[in-house]
Image (cartoon, rainbow, N blue to C red; front, side):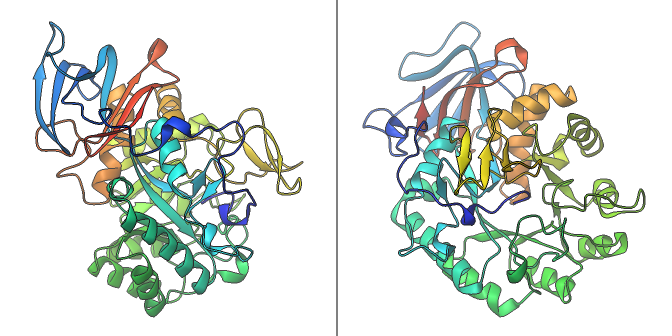
Length: 428
């Protein structure tokens, strides 16, 4: 998380005002998740096709300029069919928080995490990585254990969770790079602690963000990579040579580049240029219109290309709530959806999901729809090592799909349906 910590926000555990869950329950009504075919235009190629499903997999993709096949069909001639959006960084949304179990004032560990998935599905995201952020060891373990219990009990949600992302606690303690992570809980890498976190998560931690300048970080990166965990560099003020050493040790991702940084840095060299230039790093970026200026998103896209740039929301629990003041007036949601510390320009996390980020990327960068969709689906899947079965609408791939219309050619996206493992998670 760049601008805020969802675990510090106080909410009732029910659905927030203005964000109805109702029909968004992830387990659809009988018959609503039995689609045998999808009809529309492939976002990857523009071809009009019928996509035939066989349970959780795609069985066939066939050109159908003359209309859909008979049978149970989702879509239409004006509907784009894309690989399911995969958000690598979701802290919470709609008044619900993946870090709720880590809160000091939580009398009981909350298990009401399902609404986050339902709201994400409504915004076209069938796959997401719950993100647990810096806190004490005990509270991070509690948050991960609560999440694992929910996933163990709900196979549909488990199918929607390709990984858990742990952001921290091994981050820079400097103001700026630290962002809103709890300064008193920032610490050096500890393998025994990570093992405890992984055990609590049921082995699902497959992405971890750290600052490579912390003592012992390079050796820690090597051990994480050896254990099958993808390492991302973020909330760092590292010197360029340390960035290069971290990549040599196995780091492969930059977390929300351009955020979680000093307000002022050297012109060059610096840790932003170094990560942007390094071909060994795939960059994630928050293209919500608030975290990065349009010109910066455009530069990242032009330098990295769609194969090495992934869109993330970094959404927090305040996201999706009505404009107004929260947590005793300390935080404010502006009419634009921007979340700030009240009466300041300082961000407190992100309030938009990937549908907004895809549309913004189209407008900001001039990239094609295929490229913007790749940044939201294929590239995130490849970051997690899942590119052999996720991130493409092709035979044999998982039936994780996002169907949408694109008025005016650049949005906002109108989500028609979202499928996870062949089941309808949301239908307009």
